[in-house]
Length: 330
Image (cartoon, rainbow, N blue to C red; front, side, top):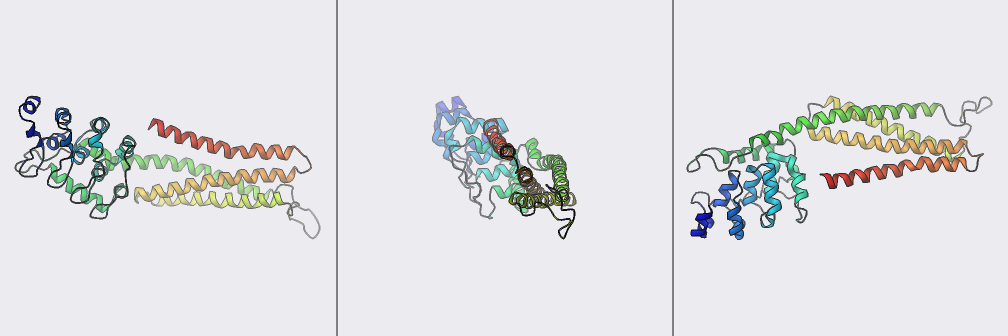
């Protein structure tokens, strides 16, 4: 390759007469990065074939994970092609998520200097994000791209070599792994939601301050006119409703385990969010309940309220720490 370029660099710009593929396209389509061509002919990276596929379209199909990372990291000119469309409106990211959706967020983090529009649609009105998960559009694109691997004159070995091992990781493998993780998460979420529902249900019948034992108002709460007690009753009811809603959501997930992964993910997120809000409501119920029965003391209810509300500070710090860890370690 080096000797050929030294003799006549114009050969690197010559596309074949059938698909107008350049030597760079062919090399990338076979799973190799021709550093010599890229370094000697940097403007060569902008060339496209007859379908307007650029280097990255081929790379998303044929390069392994590490080679793809090297190509994007070492060659800014190629990295800048990531939003370019072919004749069908497909960007390199459309090609990537068709077979290896699990690499999308990793690639996104690597090209932070470029604004990626994951909502951009192709000529069939399919967006990059919309192709994540099973769909008829995803199947159609897979079948179309896999035709590039079929032997045909003059490409007896096919136009590209699809990464078969990573192909399996990109679709069925991902769905199976996601379902296993969701099963584990669902079990733990269900325990927490059921525990909150049990505690809040019990608290509703063991009210702070007790009940009036005689008279016309027998059986009613002694502190019913206390503002803190009223806040306790309201937040306890909110916590119970949300926790039972989360339990019901997990019940629906069990009924829809044969449904789409996206539906199960939505139900899991909804259930988790309901559980988290129920936790907050339960903590407020605890604070207001203790405040209502400790009004005779000056400092104790204030201290108890302060300690209880630190729960929200801890929640914020934990979430912020998780976001920081995800940014730096992923």
